[in-house]
Length: 297
Length: 297
Image (cartoon, rainbow over all chains, first blue to last red):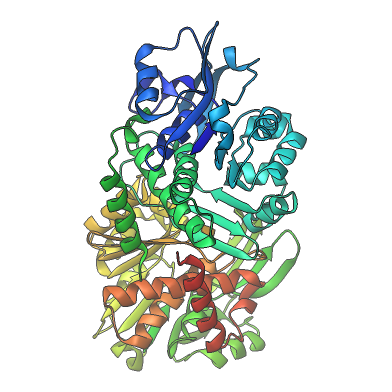
């Protein structure tokens, strides 16, 4: 199975056309639901007593919730606003709430997970959590500006502790202090990552392993309404696909990246989680085929 | 044959590591020399009496110069400075000089060119020049910020007058007043372009024709030293490849875009024109094969 550890949030997302107030969000939520299209996925996360029943229903419809905790206090809340072009997002408010002093434990049943994804969480917490798994075949982490600027050394240690890093281009540059993405990936590989996947939003992604570079174009979309969670959906699809194949050959990792691009494209076409929820296996395989046809020459 | 019309310049290019003073440049120079790797290419351009003999030797080694004019006065001069990341360029000086009142004429022998490329020149001049060709099978133009902001209506007329527009992403957005690149391309197709190719620098390009979208990843490079002329080299390679095949099938146009990516990658690896000069056919075909292998999954 696959275990995803990270944040479940109540988000307010302000897009040019629509404001979504107090919707279900969080990096781990997007990643886990995206992954659940491929494999049984367990979510380790914490919410507060204010977490709506209908949101818990959405999670339990898609995920195994043995590692899901409801604690006294309020759920992690995020409020952000996209600019008119949907290309930059300004953070208006971040309230950690119950997330602040959460001490995650890994349920016995999850400890044998061969695939583990650490969504963009506190790197020290991530390092602690990853040690609780006994039989890891493939682990992957993401990180964000906040941890890079406040806990850079811990982020580097976390990278050492996993097989793969998935990170967006701007964050890769910030973390490694390099401008060129190949140079960024080399630095992360020197720190101990076997695989580095750099996400470039609409421009697709670059996957690095050893001397191999795998650039993949994005799936072109005309109507993007809400980029929230696209990167998390990408990562979730990647590791979900690999977990479903129980394989980490280079060829499967490349295919996993393509599934990442495709699930990211579903995520941004609708608001909040709507692009991921109700997706059918056939929707995904159709779009992967369309993508393969699109890029062929 | 292929005819390229546009600017030949004497450039000063300030990169983070090196300043190139008074080097051979110009959009048409890069495009024509790039194209000359594929097909006999004629250049219609004008320079002043100050144009160095060794630069003319470089041009005559690669190009047919029946349409090349030396006039009283100074050559078009450009001075620009790249930032530390090589991602933005600031224009320090532009002196049109002999270019300002140049009245181009198309040599008799060029009038039967089936392939014509209009580098980013005055759109009114481009519209006049394109009418002088009798047997055009495929024509393509580029444009830049300067013409979009000063002569937008003429740029739109020029687009109507050619088969294909090749343009970078920021300029496509500026011209069409759209944010999404599919929407940008639709607008240019409404204006009359059959093919739209949007260049995205290191992120590759998008080609649009009818309902077809062909996204292609960039050729990943670790050491980029001077992005000058990359877009022009891309366009030159595209139309040079098509002219060499005497074909404009969709499949060949896709391959032409790949050659565009590849020649753009050669251009940025060295300073000024050095990346294009001395290229062997085998260097190009090797890199195209490497690219095909790189993106395969």
